Image (cartoon, rainbow, N blue to C red; front, side, top):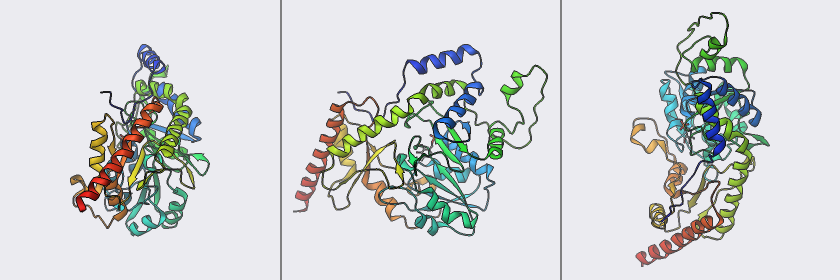
Length: 386
Ligand SMILES: Cc1ncc(COP(=O)(O)O)c(C=O)c1O
């Protein structure tokens, strides 16, 4: 039986040729293709400066380090996120403080952030969860007066929009290019910022704190000796990865349009299933539907994991909804205030397959199977109760 996957990256001959060209050039570490990829992402998203990294995780680590966040500081993060969001503050010695999220958008709100702020708060990491844009300006209005920096974790949000502009125009925005995201480089990440000085420092920090890059020295006809002006990291993307990214970028608009078209298909097909809550655009922006996350209402007597198993038995891959970091052993000992919405969401959500090559038949198969699973299980559980 052919399994309908949760995601399939949009890769083809363009990416193969681009990698072959990079290999033939003889320069495969960070170099001209990384610089060209950074410039192209800036052009596509309307950002001023881009600094490519090995992943979104290292981008978040670098961002916190560059802002001077460290021991004794607190960083407010949603627990409802991939664990990298909560890990990043820990890498710089700071303490993540979990804040709750909104039930519909799954994102932090000014109110949930405000509850988590303390005199020790240095930064807030606002996630655009599953591509759903968060209301960053409203959160900045709470943080700015207190001198708290806002970093955007836009791992999933390339191509989503916020107040009419692509996500990426904020003060410091991290992206991911992992294959579960729309645009992929295999692994990879990027920081976007309007601040030229900060971008310069981020470039230096990602390359061992070196004052000149390896490629710059290679290009010179005169001897240029590098200096190491501060403690840095090796968070360099390779030119092989950037070559893939450069071939992917021209497809970004089509990726978004196709995902939104398929998502509309789900929204129509599942609109009348009682007890099922579907994602949609928030008032302040549009989502790229990096993940199509559906929620089972609490009073729907259906077990989420059983629904996932029933779909898998029919050759349909799903994933649990977004994890809650504070429930994981890796976060034992971290302060976890009451997070009722986070806990509801992580227990009661699942992610449906969505990829550019998905056919109408596949979409219908998923929608029918989910409708059937929800109705059947609800009936069975109702029977159990009698
Ligand atoms: C919200 C969020 N932040 C960070 C990451 C980490 O991204 P990467 O795998 O590029 O390190 C992910 C990955 O899924 C994510 O969903």
